[in-house]
Image (cartoon, rainbow, N blue to C red):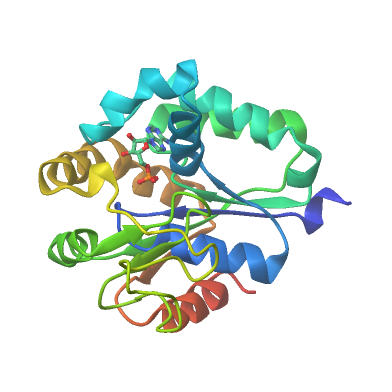
Length: 226
Ligand code: AMP
């Protein structure tokens, strides 16, 4: 496929801003994969791989894993054939260094430029959302006990279960309040500077992440002209 037909979209925002939920919807609508470094790291932990063991404590403490670890994961994933027609980046880059390396990767492989959208949600709302967030470790879908609960058809007699896999849904270890505060700090100090980084480059948009999931999805798509 011609490079100019690629959709390369990067969703930037604090943890709990809705990046994963919106990235999954965009990926389905556009028929291109979602690349979530958080999902990849959680999968490595579940497998019990050496990488998973190395990052577990860092993630549970709400800190960012080292740049070189995530950069290598992304380099491998972007090289896959199913990522050649575009990608929705969710949770990567998270530091200026990661963004610079990503720019180089895009240049070297002739990818179309990234469209960047910041999903803006106040921190108090983030705290409320993360305290009620539940997660399916099998398919990575997220739910919220009041805002986005699993379908009432799912068997809730043994606790809530995922609409798609039927697996019990869990509280992520890094959604505990102590870890949440660390993650918000990491966002403010290490990830937020990317807003200026991408604003200077152009192709930068900002949407409010407060509202219903379909409303935010429509606003995201129209902001990037899709
Ligand atoms: P997420 O699911 O995107 O909220 O990511 C969960 C955790 O994985 C983060 O709190 C970090 O510990 C780690 N992580 C995910 N993506 C990155 C990244 N791009 N750089 C560093 N750490 C990351």
